[in-house]
Amino acid sequence: MSPESRSPESLQDGAALDNPVWAALTGPQRDFAESVGLAARYLPEANPFAAVADPEDPRAWADLAKLVGPGREVWLTGLPTPPPGWETVLSIPGVQLDGRAVRAEAAPEAVRLGPADVAEMLELVALTEPGPFLPRTVELGTYLGIRHEGRLVAMAGERMRPPGWAEISAVCTHPDHRGRGLARRLISGVAAVVRERGDIPFLHAAAANTNAIRLYEAMGFTLRREPVFIGLRTPGEPGDDQT
Image (cartoon, rainbow, N blue to C red):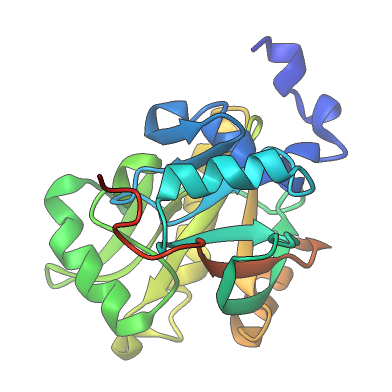
């Protein structure tokens, strides 16, 4: 991909964000992809989301069913309408926020997190429930954390990376350390990493998470669209594909 195609000027419409999982898995994060034809998903231990190239194409849904297997759960984002036979397990209204105007600033007190920190990261996620975070999620991008007396008390990092963009995700703070601006500093720190690479930060959040959305908007994030995070079960019963 040429520098021109990744410049902010060439990404003003943010088309990659209309189908960010597909754009990421067929682009910068293809090494984390499993795919069949017109469907792709992240490695299950890294991210639960999958995507189809065109939600209106029945062939893409057939490819996704083949990729995931019968009677299995999979998550998509956007405004997909699955064909008959697919069961909606959970539907969560969300927001997608454009971070073009966010001030990016390094967080000197933050430390880079990696595979050795996953156990602590999973504990913090279990306590605060910021959204999906799995054992290999940390490999999807840069994760920063803040420690207090050696204990991880706040973190944020990158998850989906469509061309020219990077989703800031897993923003969470231990309840005992809230109100100190840790999340704001970490978001700014991750945004600085994203900008240094030449990308633009963006965010997803559940629409009901109004406190987090207020913080993001105060930092300069702006509403781009209102997708739905939808958990689906593929047609059939587990084991139907076994001979």
